[in-house]
Image (cartoon, rainbow, N blue to C red; front, side):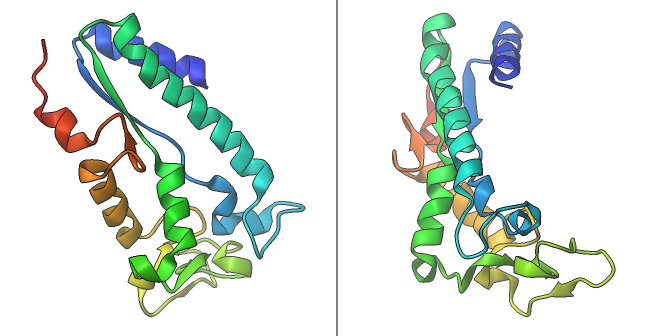
Length: 172
């Protein structure tokens, strides 16, 4: 997969892209759909999946670091989605979340067994209180917080600088 991302980055730069933003994966081992995986814990994230995500994200971050070297004149940033979502999970009330485990829309263990919109699903009363909208996807509130962090946040969220700075940088 990382090879395909490298090829894609090379292609878009060869077509004229000079500002590139690459976002890592979120903590896939924490999504409500993990309840369907054999051996996955319900009371905590599935570390086996998250370890794979962290290794993949490290590869993406290395690509971002190498892009200006391999393609002079290119500026690249890496959005630390995994770390940002884990911050929301670690401090839910600070970000206005009541539930960071279950899906707002779904059914079964963690709301991850029946997909939103399928027969038997249930919808929570206040989606803004949930980190996850459905069995796999973050809620609208989560996406809003994430987009703000990537746009104007510091190196905890995006490196080497945020999207606002990237958008406003002159290209040589």
